[in-house]
Image (cartoon, rainbow, N blue to C red):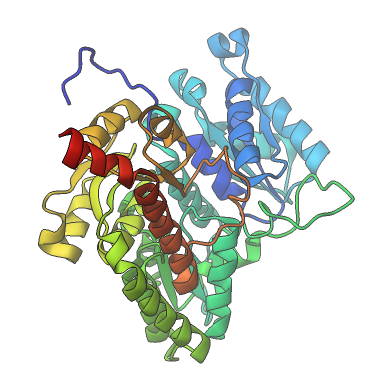
Length: 451
């Protein structure tokens, strides 16, 4: 798209790297995040996470001021870490940088190493991660943080566990993945596990650090596991936790898409079968049969769909495959991250089916809206930030991904597995039907009478 300005984004289709890091660390038992930067960064992230997950989200900040920005923020960071330990008594502290800290050249590894030596702290694990907001998106921040956890904690050994590296999914999704794993009677390490920490049951007493999450012991044992399944086919090797475990400890790595859509769920189930030697149980087999039946039922309606799908790359890929295998044409795939693999993978999997699909990365919503109208899109699939296109152009939005601020229950939604995929497909189909029945008389009048 031609622009009148250079280096200008309007409503970028992405969150920053520290946002992804914050979500990743919330999946670790008794962990808290310390952001080295100005206080506004932690407020921005807490606000987004609290309204999406409907849970309290505490994030510490080194609260850099003008003095710290000019002369270095070392003192702010060390005071902040001492206060955080005193107030929260955490087992793990993720220390991440922001745009400001990176721009003034703060060496987060050195600062954390010095702090640990000075305070003689042996019972708190620190995981420093360099996450400049301008260095990527929440997608890169999420996987890089998981990799740094594994680099810091995983050790050599031997056990019969299977490592599952989860994508950025909902707590409801994580619970469903655990159900599937338990149906195979697998002993596993799930990293991260946000199923309880970001969707906790009601409790009268407020807990600063909620129960649940992946334990340090689980991460330590990942180096001796029999295999790793990483839910991420677009993750670069340099930020891949599974790739590190393979290179460092020889743990075989299997990569799979997020398990949404028939082919993607099949891939995940077949990998579990291959690794464990067990067949899926009757419950899973029946769920697959019901999904096939639902696809047959709804295919004739879905053929009318021309979708614009946007969000983080792994989710866009999973939704695109669900649409393609159900007759919905993905006219536009858009992500704020930079990725060249998306088009390659779709063409490899669906061949000529995506020849006319427009795929754009590192983009913003002004660009997306322009193409939505040019490509005659009739349904939007993505997070809440695309809602303004609905408001301006009347094209319905089916919400999925992060963030979802304008609907309740985002943390409970399930999109993975056969049943989660069917429920999501039904929502897409019903949205297409609702749009058709609300406008067909006007469309017929315009087409055949008014001319």
